[in-house]
Image (cartoon, rainbow, N blue to C red; front, side, top):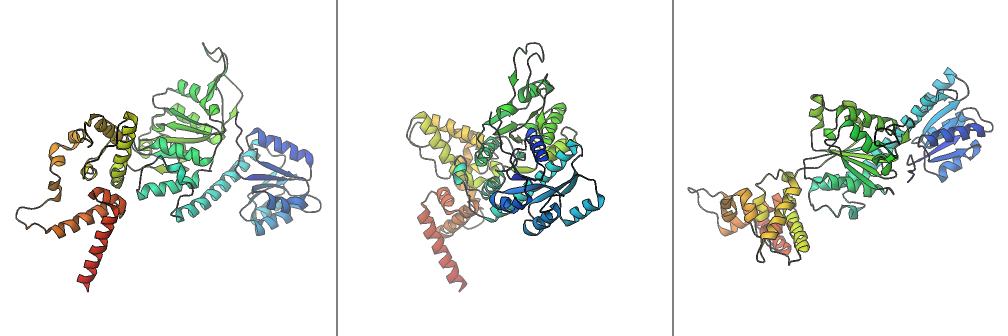
Length: 471
């Protein structure tokens, strides 16, 4: 089984008592917190902070040679980005208040209930993770470039919204928090989940399961597995998908269709970080990141009482919405060409020529099945094409023969109005193509059926004409 290092930053344990360091280390490791550094000599703390990426410090208050109070003051001044939890052998109210005022995240007594100590540590880790993620997110969104563009080669797009989404994915990829992917069927939610997994650099696998239609028992057995003898027919131990995804990513598709009882179990998994296989009284720790997706509106689902609010807010720590194809119309020429080439490769035939204006004409269609529908249409068209030109018969069934046979009708000339000159019509067509392509000359050129240099020359001439007329 792959063991995930968690959290992404190191937790520094500082105490002059070796027995406390050992017991606390074992406790944290038992609950999956295994990225630890221990220090018995407080004078070594400053060098350890320089040597390791420390995000959280568990600091004893009373130590010889250098007190926890002095170290807390140093952390507050020199490393305010590091969270510090103070441990003390005594429950001293004045000391606790003073430490919190000085910047400590929390003040805990060593004899405090273990669960309470763990809850405080988990809150500190969560706070620190969000802080680090926000810093990375701000830096990435301010950048217009992708740091790992090779992870997005499976996406055929020039859309600005999609490029912003890719930059966001790069920022959240190292996080251990859940990701909620929303969007209509066919927009590519599975591709997005795969990109997040690849970007994260996790060594474990990406395990995918569609939870739509799973009743509570099947959901539990599928995700959590079962012990031998848990029920009739359970003659051996079954490993659940949560365990199969250890060190990697668990992707739950169609989460909006999850039953109410299964929602409770998923919420506990995310909140507590543990689960029980069916028939077992020994909990297991989740060592996978959870990504979920849905085509449904979960806000409306909440209002109708079909989806838990607490689960929704837990899932949407990071949220990605994929726009439908009708909002990415400048991607149509790219997708048409990509799917045509893909289909031709599979059918072992030469590449076909796509009719001029086809992408422009398809912009009037809503594409309820989004990219998946377009792919199916292009594959069907390629299979029916008998010469070197991609047949339009498949698309005619969607748009109607009139629209494809008479593209000039799209210009909308009025019978009682004079026709524009060829120069005026050319200018209008170029302006419209640039508008639909979001000022991307390569896309606009493909819409117009000319080369990019030719379009660039036309745009330059139009600008010079405008400058002269303005003068």
